[in-house]
Amino acid sequence: MEIKFDGAEANQHHIEAYEGVESIAGITRVAGLVAHYAATGKVRFRRPFSQDIKYYFERTEPGSLGLIFSTVARNAGQANALADKASKLLRRVIRRATGQVAERDLTVGDTIIPAGDIDVLAEAVEPSLRRGHAWIDSRGKKISIKSDGYPATLLNSETREYLETEEEAEELDVQDVSVGAVNVNGRSGRVFFHDLGRTVPFRAPKTATARTIPTLSRFLVQYADKTGATVNINFRRIFYPDQRLKRVLIYDCYPIEGRQ
Image (cartoon, rainbow, N blue to C red; front, top):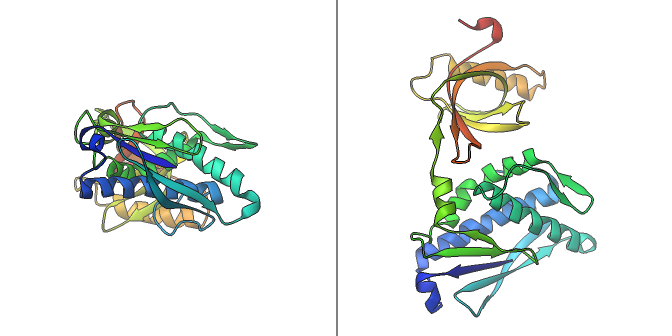
């Protein structure tokens, strides 16, 4: 994997230390999260990640400013296939997370990675990808990420703007969902949208009804017990600029028979 900085001071072969290191840390964390999925088939939102595949910093390259990372897989017999899977998936996830490609499955060898999984990965990497844009504070700056033989993926002021922009739906909506996670103190978590085939992050504003968080918590237990129970939420959708669902604000939550 190569991370290359172009524009502004990078043209003199150096970058501002703090912002540059922040961008490198964000991008390499994205790579580690994607590599974890490539190795395990599971999405993690935080460390620790799988030890089956890692990225190691090796050297810098001539040019504006390029950093080279080697990909090392623990299982030597599957190293090439795993590294290729991680590289191809990394490119797709970054492009999906920054609005550069539409929703679709990804084929790697004889494996098909569902579009829903890619969207969950795109959501999982978003905080790190925002960090990866730390150095990009003007239109003249860009960072390219070249992943083991695949065309480079570009981060620039447009991709930063995409990540930082959101549009709030005017109308409230009602839908039946499963509850995947609840942080009671943070009034946040994740709910599973069956029509999307994936979980979506939520936040319950202070204006939400008093029963919202307790009811969500109760149905989280149902989810953990695999009862299949679902619950209605009254919510507002928050979108990315291309209308991809980013998160929801839940104002009320109730069993179907408890609706008032």
